[in-house]
Length: 440
Image (tube, rainbow, N blue to C red; front, side, top):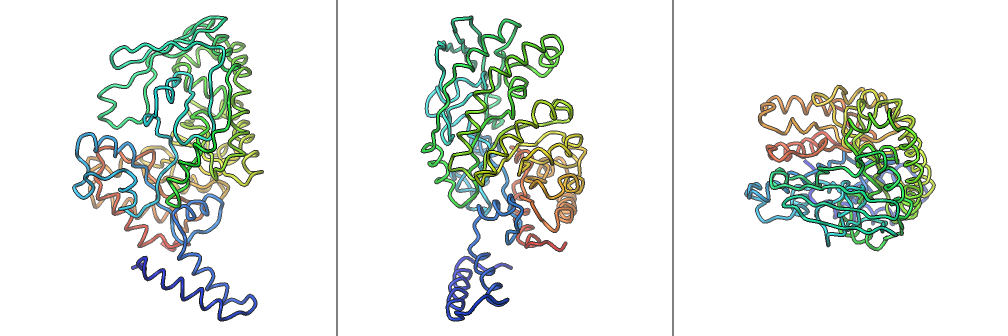
């Protein structure tokens, strides 16, 4: 059993006093005492950053993503009895786990302007370190029941999209709206969207980010959001059309796609430079890589150069790059390892994907920190019994051992119907087995 907070403080004071009284040069005793004092003082944020930098924290960091679970259960009034009336932050603190602060709160808006340009993949959310503004473009917004139609009028033509957020999505805890009708519908739309991006104004918004960073404090790292896409072509695929349409367009209109990518370059360059100079320790850029959708040759040609470019900028400033890698990554593992990313977040192993944690660790070659590891289905009572859950988690901890470059999390997120006692149980396992290096 670990020391309680008050006992740890006594240890800390005693050790520091002993160090002062020794007043001698470096020795094994002094070194060991200093390490013990530093470990006792380690915060959730320090643990996560040490793991992300390829250093050893005192124990395995544990940061489950709870926002979707919380959104749904707080709406239905089905939060566990002991957490009724709690905020999400209070639940994290009550559990004694690190705060998962990676994905922005896309629906927690101060005004409609914060996420009205969702169809363009552009946001002005609280906590972002940059701000983007439309120039020389008129935006017309119309409400249609649960949908919002946004039209963009430019000197060279108009485009529009339809954004949806239904009651069903709300009850499921969905944290982002759905694009019902995409911005690009015909070849003529490419030039219009390109015009919009060439006329964007991107400026630092560091005070906005600092508010977010200060709120999170030492309870986790506050990732600065770049984009859900990692590159212009990835952005087009994710935001401007359905995947099926995208691959038809890549065959039918490759020149138009390439030109649009060129038009979007200045936007990405501006965001990268601003985030590299921001107060953030970690930058989140790019999500939902998958060996089918972002298949290896596509990833290598259209995504990897941008990850390498951004990571180079960040590393020069002592910052880290995080990507949300929640898809089927087996065919991409060797590329992820060489992409420049420091943290592969939302890593999901078997039975939800083909990969095992051992395979991922071997492919990453200690170059990339794994953030994730717990498949969300193991938290659902319908998926396995408590005995099966215990056996699965014990095997998982053995695969994770010795725990180098690992932040334990739930991939992609704790589901709304999770058996919450299992989240608590994982926390107990971390306390029982998670002292690093693990010797399971």
